[in-house]
Image (cartoon, rainbow, N blue to C red; front, top):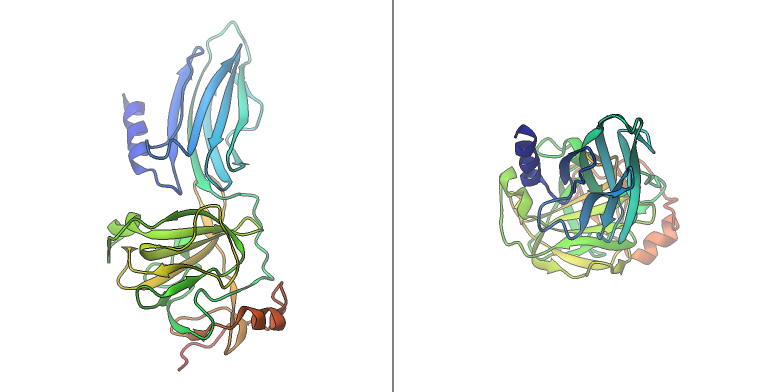
Length: 315
């Protein structure tokens, strides 16, 4: 009864970033993992039997890799991989993750497991030489209201996120080339409390090195791209808003990599600015975006411009 209660509590707590499932089986009973009902179509963890072997499968219908962490408790079973285990599974695929097999067929065997997953690959390694485009059109300048380690909300996995104050409907540009792997634009709800967090409209873009860019708080129907579409740095992909956990119209941007099925980490990056070249942005700083061609000419495609941190303030 306790396991069943925990299972449904886990289901109720799932989000696209951290679904989990807990299942158990004994004596050969098959069990099926998975997510909440609307997520089950995209990611499903399940088991099948092949004679004496129990096979664990990951069905991933997302447009991006997922990283899954399995925590498994066994009795009289051996695994084809070391447990617990974390692995990354390709987009739009069904993959055999591992198998369990009885050590002694004359004895009872059983197992229980919990799985967690997040979008992204735990094998991703950020290219720190890269210089990013500011997330708004060339010639425009906006103030950074919360920078890295921001006291209000930039902690934990959002430690290296950035917020820009901008009027609702401001064009939002891709900061780096990539592919749109997930988005939401149907929300028109927001407010100054974490309880509104689940209502944020967003666009998620995967970069070549496996890192992800998360553009948040977009306005209702504010996505100008589709899932699967390739975008280029400087291209307008959406419009800013104030949906989700938001005290007012702004854009929240976070570049991150997935660590395992439970955790992700944000990454500090440099942006090309008209005022200071390639720098890390500071709170209260105003930075003007440059033409993509000018940025490429000055820094090269791998960001060979000046480094360091830009002064705060500005005109």
